[in-house]
Amino acid sequence: MQNFINQLSQVLEKKYILTQDEDKAPYLTDWRKRFTGKAFAVLLPSTSNEVAAIVKLCAQYQIALVPQGGHTGFCGGATPDNSGKQVILNLKRMNQIREIDIANQTITLEAGCILQSAQEKAAENGYLFPLSLGAEGSCMIGGNLATNAGGTNVLRYGNTRDLCLGLEVVTAKGEIWNGIKGLRKDNTGYDLRDLFIGSEGTLGIITAAVMKLYPLPVSQWTTLVACENIASTIALLTLFQKRANSLLTGFEMMTRESLNLNEKHFPQMANPLQGNPPYTVLIELSDHESEEHVRQLLETILEDAFEKSIISDAVIASNLTQANSFWHMREHITLAQAEEGANLKHDITIPLSSLDSFIRETDELMREKFPGVRIINFGHLGDGNLHYNIAPPLGTDPKTFNETNEKLIHELVYGQVERCKGSISAEHGVGQLKLDDLRGHKGEVAHDLMKMLKTALDPQNILNPHKVVSI
Ligand SMILES: Cc1cc2nc3c(=O)[nH]c(=O)nc-3n(C[C@H](O)[C@H](O)[C@H](O)COP(=O)(O)OP(=O)(O)OC[C@H]3O[C@@H](n4cnc5c(N)ncnc54)[C@H](O)[C@@H]3O)c2cc1C
Image (cartoon, rainbow, N blue to C red; front, top):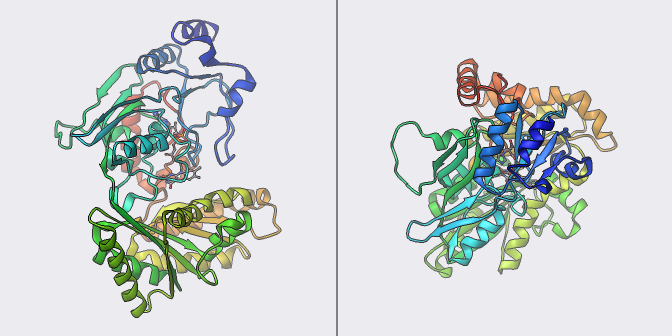
């Protein structure tokens, strides 16, 4: 190991090679505090060449690397194992915005750029970088790409994958693949870019990316709407999709239980809808035509929804501050859950046509088998994405409850997901959390293909081993 460190110090200044426990500590525990690992060192490179040189050295000494961005992931993908033999490669110093190309409507970002900085840079230039999620103040573009993050704008603009045109990646051999191209068409054989996106650091290290920009909307209207049941929220989505089409940019569902939790931990986030209804839906319309046009459209659709008895109440944000407060309410649910203590998360997708039966049946089974559990159910409903989270009964020690029931609760939820032909990971990835669940979910053929890809691209298994697939 000493030889490795000696050679490393020819690549990186000593202050960017962290080996002391107190220096390494902030990089070892994930955001949810579910996983804590040990690392031999934390490395902080600032260029792609430095990353490539580090990977070459790791390949030479057969040392495993754990790529890390903002460390906000929910599946323990950026946390090392307990061996103390792995190194963390944190990319936060690679935070340059390399280029904004207005004619091409693209922005080229290094992997360590904080998502919010990318959004701000785009806005300064009159453009929208639409990727948006609760962790945007600390997650990084490399992490967003590696997890194919979703967030609140997927309905209109797609996942991170859909926003990416080109990548620069350091391979397991320590070579730099330069795929930094801003092309919307490129049918030159296998799509390497798509292979690395969503691979959670197991196939290569993303060092930079070309991302799409969009014109900034001239007007946005945000509303909170009350629905009595999940069937009505789906009917409302159908109505908005039909009538507003691509002007619909947000459709988020929050249950009464999730907003009660918000209010308990963040009283300023109280639901402005009277009586905190069973389902609150946050809807956003964005328009490039005029303020007037979109406001009228929103009012007409809401009137229609009232007439059809799909909704029972609605509040339209009267200004930007109020619109932001609606979004903050949605984003604070995750934080309120963290304040409440450990809970069991399920980030799932269900086809919208099966969502009603999924929720009704899963809720019923859950309450029957685990009396008193609190179902904290919310999500990006427009994408069929539910965060179906289970908090222990009040007065129960979360640690003991989770240790006893975690496996059974996951089996119940994932069994229902399979029945509905859904996915056990909508947007958070697999990491180490869902490693064991993946095989059964993907099926043998898909799982074997994934293992073959991993073996082909990383034969020494040094890139984030035992995350996503084990070989
Ligand atoms: C409050 C909150 C709200 C959230 N909301 C959402 C949401 O709405 N939608 C959503 O999808 N996620 C959400 N997340 C989860 C998380 O923010 C995303 O998964 C995000 O994309 C992770 O980015 P990161 O930079 O923190 O990556 P990290 O957590 O550091 O890493 C995640 C994975 O990517 C790998 N990785 C990181 N950087 C690189 C790189 N440069 N090259 C190769 N591999 C790399 C890591 O090894 C790890 O496997 C939320 C998290 C929080 C805390």
